[in-house]
Image (cartoon, rainbow, N blue to C red; front, side):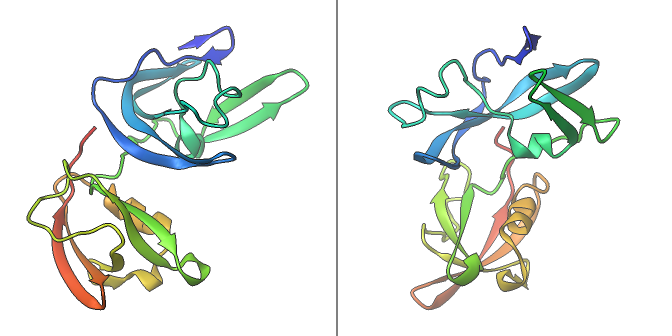
Length: 193
């Protein structure tokens, strides 16, 4: 809802999931991700939009972000031509599509991080045990070697994350390396929000 030139999100959604949200000037930011019922910008309506809820308690950026309770993020902005008019103090949004595509959140329960030389190795940073099948053998720190038989050396982090949010019920063959041992798991994507 746009009020006095500001977009306001009232309260957190009923369903949300704890997540790593990114890195700010003061360090790592954690919080929650959920879906807001609807966002309206002018005549453009976006239903069920993903929104992040950073936990800024005791964070160095807390004072700067006072009064802000949610973030739409770059995935949202990438669907608009955005104009910043500093002189007149407004931001203009021109949709790139007639209909806004449904944005999905990582449905794997695995948080993937990049590391190694040129950030071309991918590791499991965190595991949401409420999402990941308990019969799978994943551990934090495992190196992800392949996804559906495609070597991760041929992929970038965005491609891996796109696969992990691709489609509810989709099965993925994930090969990881732990202490020099290769481990294969079938992972079923599950929409959690």
